[in-house]
Length: 390
View (tube, rainbow, N blue to C red):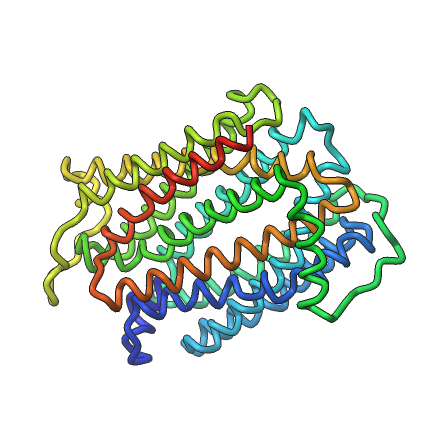
């Protein structure tokens, strides 16, 4: 996103705002395409073994990313994004469905909180390191090398995952992607609480994708700042979700329940409206000197922007962790990986809608703060609907 917004978009002759949203769409498409075989593999194999295979594949894909950075080719990097989405599509059902095999029900909130915190701490450190290095002299070499090294470290870490018993060693891997996917949904939809939690999670990813995809252009074109501020926004967002995720266990006292999820949704809604209110301003004039993070955050008028972003993210952490625990605990053991795969599909659909919708709204002349505004009332309505899951 940083490369597209500040360098490759102009070089490719494409509006960076449109290209950033296209990148988000390319990344999430594989979650829809590969959901069925990913679920079947997670049930057929020892999930710890599957996770090791997938993490090894990440080393290969990250080598492709390093090449893409080196040759400075936006289309090759788009292809790598697709492959990273595919790798994640196979990793996710195993990652989430292995938790109920190792944890008791009263440990699921804490387990999912740690998963989400770890995920967003990784996003935080990766975003800061990548964002600060990629546009610097020789930054592509540092980022490419680090990407491969971290992927290798992830593979080595996967060796520590305790083994599990396969759910169904005779499970056939169906390549009838549409038919098998529909079959999985037919299993999930009757489980009303699980299906409701799944859709609510997908809404979280729609909101998150909307905000994360717009940060670079929001920072540059609306606030007139350089890439360090966009990086800081991503860091604030990641840190907020991580802290909110960890706060869940203390608030819920290990109880698997959605009783506080509506309140978290209302918090996201209010903070989104406030963010629009404090940042809806005319676009920055071409040629304006971009200010850095130190100057931006030293100005008192920007405090509310920072606060709103953190509030949205913190409430997001409180929102999503209980929903994952509900999916894992309320679905039959032999259906958990299928539920997670279906969740990935609905997540991908919702994020694709976010990318497509944002692109369409921008082409209609809607400002980025106004896009943030739309997240307010819509998330409030989602909160009302989630209250029925209690």
